Image 1 (tube, rainbow, N blue to C red):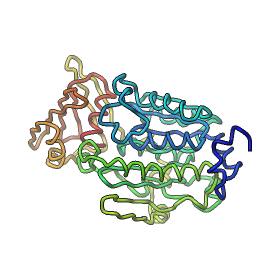
Image 2: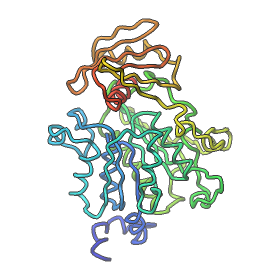
Image 3: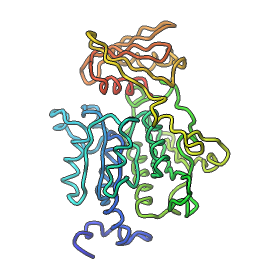
Image 4: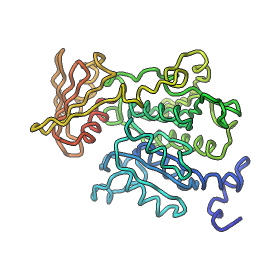
Length: 367
């Protein structure tokens, strides 16, 4: 074994892995979308495993409340107000200098996701791993993964519950290595045709989150990503894992037939609505008002103000009527006024930055 591979000796010993599997990892590229609770664990473990190139994309800065579960960060990063992607890159450089890390400080959306997946060492990345906190971004990533035939490992965690699922997308020619192995899986929209309306899907900022459940889910994602990158197709799970660490339950949902029995607009009809920007949110900075308007096109008419108000009241005063909801929120010590309208629009007052407004919306309302 060469000196370059010596640090990976313990995983090289594994059956179905060996030096050949390690060399595949070192030659591969992974896009990690989001570098929060899930993303930091994913980046940490994939770097230690020797995935040769990690592209980490995240729009946010580190806050003190992140440290309870976001394992790559410390109090110095909070004090220095370092973007999460850049802080992760610096920390990973001290963990494994053999791994190339590209930090992208940006909001992942339909306009840039294809550019991100084309940043791999040999063109497109070999796998996309989910570390985001909202369904809109997940649907954008899912569209891109299906369109370009790239495996996508979904994951999510809130409260004490988490889920993970490996998507090996069907392609028009059916000539991907996983299709040849007979293990292609339904895409995210096969299983969740539409995202839940905001306010009905809890976020960690409104419902809380137990750190260990994040680690369990993200490590499960890493295991599936490593199987994908080493070509161990038959070992990849074809069920959606769901775990509740407080209730001590683990369930495996059989979703394999969702592709066969459904007419998925994404992977069967090859219509990429989120990637085309048809259903994504748009932002407008309101001149002279220190505020940003967000338009959630796909959610018009679906807001449940009472549900949302119940989640927001622990964070500040909330006024609600049948036309609108207005809440005063302090986030990382900064005051914001969040106004939601029945037609799906939202105004975040207290910032002129669309990225900040989207972050506030995602944290306290969901998407």
